Image 1 (tube, rainbow, N blue to C red):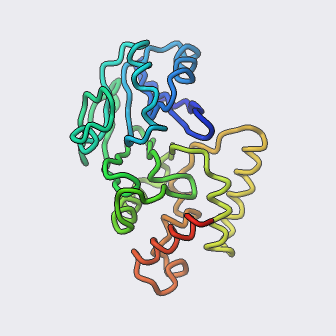
Image 2 (cartoon, one colour):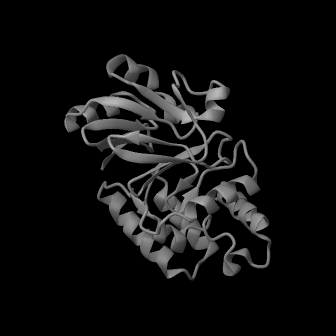
Length: 247
């Protein structure tokens, strides 16, 4: 399986996913960058996968349908029931799966950022949208802190070598915040140096890896005794998220 990051807007990522001649795009906020990517890859785009309904993840749907032979627009059942994703054809729930070019794609519901947020997992790749970022997580807009912490706990239980493809290029800022939570964490310090160097070289920081997230991401480490500092897990998560909101 080939995954090609497609930068969109100021800091969004869409992803072109290619398997056995089939192509899908994850979270296309814009059509033009995706159309350029499929032209360069010389593939036909037949599917659109949406992690949630926010405008900066779905803005390219309509023009892509006009230009490409789209067979499936896949999103969560919640977003489908509430008609939040235009032209949605497939309503997906926790534990569902579908075939894509011979690869199995699994669905995990991860509410918190939005109530309809889902992740797509296939061939060791996690497309996490705005729920999990490298060294961070999304704001809690529609759900609760408990809901979001449980969603992240789901994702951190995936295999350690899982590649993390997230919705935004926020890595440097996230790692700088992580230093304020664990100033003695050398893994965070090392990851920040690497991320800064990558961005200065105009390179992507995606994909991340789950094992590195377990070592550096404060929103994965919220219930670690050294991070929780005596608070219960949900209170610890909420305190970290609120601190990040004001960082």
